[in-house]
Length: 245
Image 1: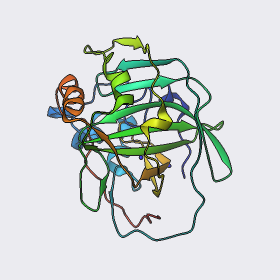
Image 2: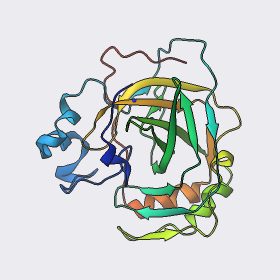
Image 3: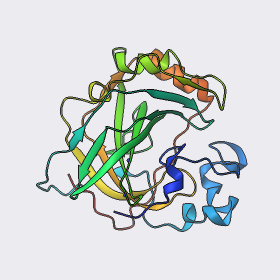
Image 4: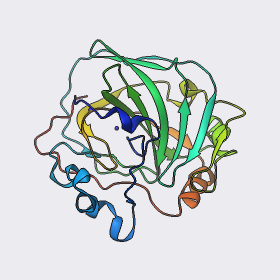
């Protein structure tokens, strides 16, 4: 929400799947909206010319037999940031994902409303991206959809300290239990894609969970109101890519 090699610098502060905000301004509205990202700078050209871009509409899936997700979790200090494009939670070491016989460590997770990826043509009210990196700097993104429902107690831990001003940060008094934030079942779709923000670097492993979590309408609206607008990139062409289940 890769199997490509990625720029390590993009993992420190991130947007959709990036971590460092480029000096050049880009956004989701006006002249700097997603349709124009590729024209804003030569560094962003992949946003227009890339053939394995994210997000996508997930359909026409090939059924396969694959291992379950191998995830480990560790509660530790977390920092929440409003970087102007999303609300991001930075985490310490100890949360890992093992895939393709490689170990990836969670760097941060952040949110988009509405969702960036679609499943069978459907947008969801909100989507979280958990950004993992291995020792070579390659990225895997695990994407989690949220439907409107009961208030989410783990989101509430972050939402009560959500910074309203761009550039503001806070240390969470209660760390989000990532395992509790995820659904009990972890079936997933997998495909190769890109960062969903400039420079749209390709080679990212994408894991989109099939099961959703819930968040209240108030929780979703609070995030959206602080962002002041939608912060999702439109879906991109598949260009022959295969999605496996």
